[in-house]
Amino acid sequence: MKLKLLAGLLCAACVLPTMAQEKKSAVSFFGNYNKPSNGDGMGNVFASYGYLVTSQLELGLFVTESFSSGTTTTGVGGNAQYYFGNVGKVGSYLPYLKGDVLSMSGGPASYTQYGAFAGIGYAMTETTEAFAEVGATNADISGNSQSGSQVNLGIKFRF
Image (cartoon, rainbow, N blue to C red; front, side, top):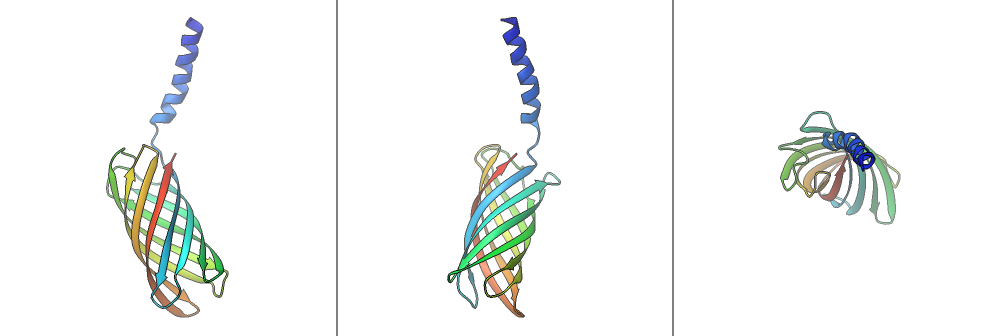
């Protein structure tokens, strides 16, 4: 019995400190439908990795696949996201602002896109957050400026 108790205490001593640590890394999966002002609409799916560099500022990298008029385009980018609240507080809403830059290649043209977003997340658990964001984008495609709007819906897992 003492051996089982000792083994349980050793396991708890190893596991509890890692559980108490702040979850600074995150993986997100999200998607949208984007309707540029002067072009065809496109669907986008994203996968991203973010890291909290402070308690409210997250820096991240992401990859995306865009689908439009039978064409698939691949992109990579980076973002910065500022939270107005406590990240990971269960049952709380977490408003934020985000800016990103995206480099797309493939399809008829390669281009760079810039975006500014306002969003809100809901912490379902300490490590799982659902979010929605709305934003404006501007892309320079073959020398033509093209603006648009986006609504992104997704889920984030913190670890």
